[in-house]
Image 1 (cartoon, rainbow over the protein chains, first blue to last red):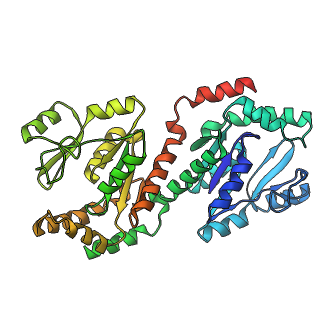
Image 2 (tube, each protein chain N blue to C red; image 1 turned 180 degrees about the vertical axis):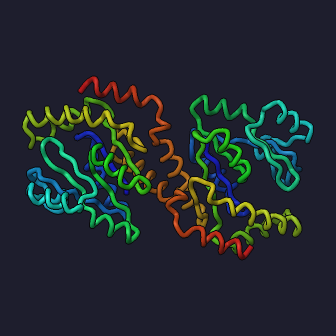
Image 3 (cartoon, rainbow over the protein chains, first blue to last red; image 1 turned 30 degrees about the vertical axis):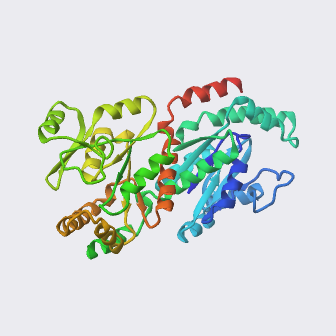
Length: 201
Length: 201
């Protein structure tokens, strides 16, 4: 379970898409949300868009691994698809905020790898947030405040990537994924492999 | 501090050389040893070859980070060059056995990343050991027994690389190095960087 968090505008969504494209064996965890769909978003791909009552039902029936409220909207991570992927030996990517990451850490610390993506500068962040023409000035301002809040949780993460250049950042994320897969603690079945070698020496 | 260990014949020395060639900012820790120089070895490069009395003096004066006896020969890691490299922001590669790795773990756990290199099969190991024409049959047999002993310590390491293909193994080692450098705990000075961004938001 690979978690990416960052303030809005640091490039997390772009990086997630690029990573999923090049990494087989990695699939996205699609969150459920009560927030309205934005132009260009696809239901079931960017988010699973649900009404508040539906969200509450999922939460109350224990179908969410974690959930949180951000800017009055509810966000949650459905459990079913994750259990299925992990059970079949695939890894799961989470594009969630620090609250979601913190909740996941409590539920699944051993399986979790967390990465915080930082912008190269405050100005880069401002530029990227203002470029989202679809958002009103008020929304941009609110997101700037949110970014400042999000960014202060950077040191709760395992790895830090400074997204100055997306290609370089993609390489760094792939290195993290490759290295984590080589960790002894994740290499189940290697004990048998070693015993087999030893028996023949 | 990146430690590579493996049974003889698993390709550790070749991989170390390749890694040093492509990774700037990484330098080799050259061990001191009392064992005789082999044909083709260079004093000060492969090992620092010393007499027993010289080794004892270094050890007694606290100039060795760790030391061990393997096949009646003494091996040790000089402290000075490592302190210098780390102080100047470079990383240090150690080509040492499980005893050395265990000693280093006790001295410098926080700074240490340990990798065990496994052969793809017992047969691959045997072939590589027999191919070292310079060694007598007796030495080969003794090294096979040593390999069996070394290999049983595989699970004391952070990462495991199965060296089926050296190019693939090199990529894996580079991924481990890249990922470890991105760890929050190693990114000193990032707190100031983040505070600077926040102050401008």
